Image 1 (tube, rainbow over the protein chains, first blue to last red):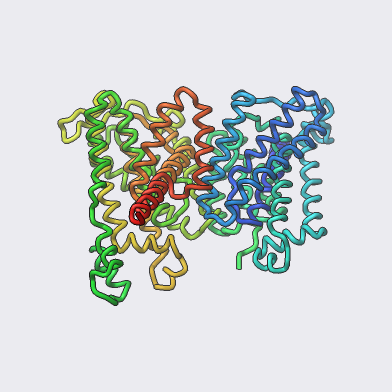
Image 2 (tube, chains in turn orange, red):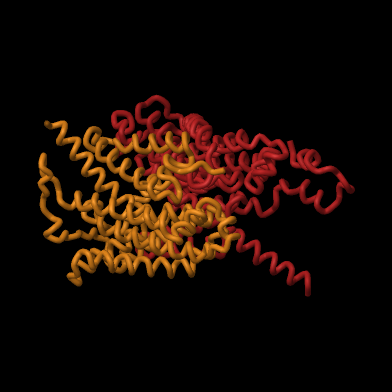
Length: 291
Length: 346
């Protein structure tokens, strides 16, 4: 019975953590796939959004759902401004310039957060409906984790439908596959990129808010989890929503399992696995091979 | 081997040897008068600021580390965010040899540090350099994180999170005491190591090997087309770069008399990348200019206004990426050319 409980703990905890990872990383995957832009500052948008959401709840006493919406809108707006003024200039630049630029943005976000809010970590008060335990029949588990898993599933379904069934989704897929060809066919790639960038950053904000309860929220957030976001994206494959979803869940479950069975330094296996996996399939576990 | 032979091999001789282009190619590896300036400045620093020699050693080590990155990134164009992997390997090699009393002679321990770091560089280079772009960037970060976690896990040997404190290092040449109390020995020793490594790197980049690295950076496809063994060159370059970073790490462990996990930090990799870009990459002296500018600013600003320092650093990086892609030296070059052309016009 103990083993079953452990397994359920690992699966449910890992899936909920993985869901948050997915919500944050999905935008990064799509924007990188579209433009090949190495945006290391993506986590900063998650952090910014998380702060907006948590501060709106703690200081202005807005309820959770409204705060999430506010975070989405605020972060999307900020990202559009940055995209139009700064990112745009570096689309054709080398990878190195993009890396430097986005590292610079991370530092700016961190320092600005310390100056504006302070260096202390922020706590998220869950609404009472999500706070308690839920009876799953065979065991009790935290309602919030179940809620996250369900929300993640709804989101991935929504994004997948948008990708497969809408015109803009088709345009995104076409551009990820072959940008030059898509441009020749009259797809406005720049506009497409602005839209997906804003949407992806908004999603990152929601991820930051939803994850704040167990990942914490402090000014170092953008740098602390950067490696995890990048692993999720590179394992999942660029521009591949389902791939990133699977990779994130896998990463979450693996992380939980290792923490339980190898509390000291279990993360070493995550790095080792990532290296082996990327050597085996440089395009990611679920990515399609470049032609 | 000089550049003259490589130029003659790669380009057919169409005109007399005193053609301006031929002259530039023949003379580009000559030592210019201004190349002595950093070393003169280092000697002046030694006599002028005896109280700051500890800081001076740190500066010299950072220059060496940035120089090693310049070889990989500036010349071969390998974009890495995991160079601290080799810095840490070198530091832990020296640290563990000294802590367990196996080997404490400073010069040979640096050579051992270089050897171990080179082995790690070779092994990781063999697998990493198959990939490019984001995957390569990810793999370099992962390798570094892997080594850091490894050092953290092997607590019994590496001291885990606390590291290895109070290392003893033998006197240099058996005569000059070597520990943090003798900052002048450390400074001069670091300076000598840097000079040796610099002469090595300088010779290397002007050799046919170095020229082929530049070729790989500038046009990968063309280098494949002319039959250059691209992958082998990249791996060799990565290995040499790793060895130099290992020396820098070993020197860091020796001068601080301790090692800890911070040797493997992502912050360290990011900082050295920033230093190199700030100074200007692919031009040897960028490491010097960048390290001086960065450490001086950090030393005097970060202590009093850490947040403002981070904000300023961020703004500086964005500025460099957008407007000054060749760093301080690149800016200087542009200004100098403008001045020279104006003088020529009038």
